Length: 106
Image (cartoon, rainbow, N blue to C red; front, side, top):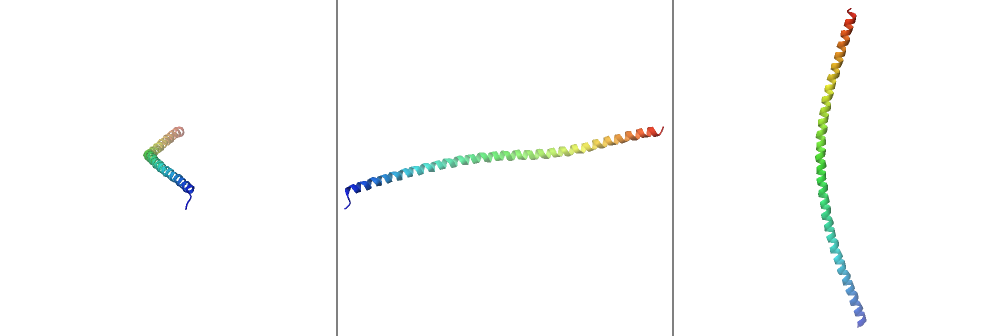
């Protein structure tokens, strides 16, 4: 037969083990709650980053349009510069021609 002192000690140890089991269950529930809260926060952060990405995409599209407009303006100014230089060369040649004609026809 089992000694009465041994049964008490086994019962006390079983109580301690049960208490540890309850503590681990409580800890597991708390960690699950913490994990859910962290997941919710990270989802919120992900949504914020998505909205910021959309804003950057909008700004990028605006820069593309602005870049196209600047290229068109550059092409226009290049054409006008060519015409201006061409006109100046033509006037310079006509002045040289007029001066040389006046000099040699005397």
